[in-house]
Length: 247
Image (tube, rainbow, N blue to C red; front, side, top):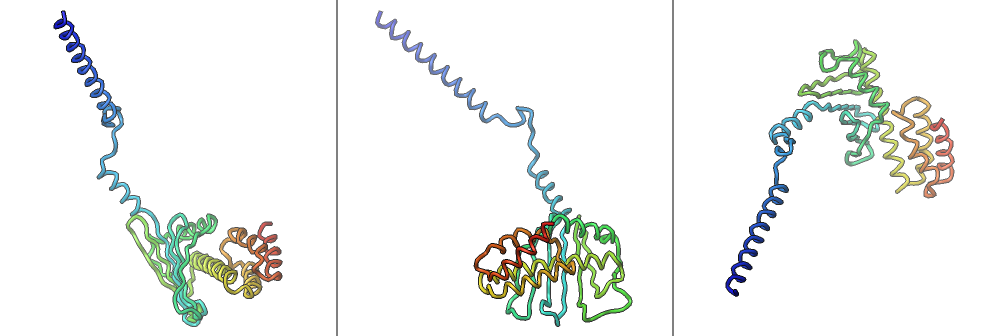
């Protein structure tokens, strides 16, 4: 009787072991099942890499350069992508080294820039845009665009094409805006007494339409209007300018 019980117990334990192994194997198969077994087929790694490379090659890069050795800001380089994000690098006679800052072209300004490049059919054209007369005091401007594996650059002093002129002016407005932002932030941190002069400069630039996107400056001007590190005259000036920007 005892032998029969032992045999029966051994049989039950063996059956449980087999059942447990089968359950574990089924669970493992379910977890490690390949995406193809569920009807989802991931793209081959090579194809994904090719797609990323194609997108990178087709992305546009915009570059602007200006040189005039007699100007206080005698060299400027702006580079940005098709979303308007990039950098500005400029050299001033008062500085030993060039200054590099991030830049973000506003949506409105970027739309104008892209529209002017399209109007020029820039990548499809070989026109130089230089007018019949040169004005050395105006300096040299270089426009460069690369997109879809194609690239073109052109240099001129004073263009006779109205779209090229407008594009040059757009980048000069970007320069004025970026330089003001750099200078006022530096004044807040190190030279607060320079702030009133800079606020006067900004008002002049706004009146002459020499700022890329005045609305983009509103948050900064609002902060300046309450920054007690600045003289009261500069803060009051910021309040007046803010009212104009918010109209």
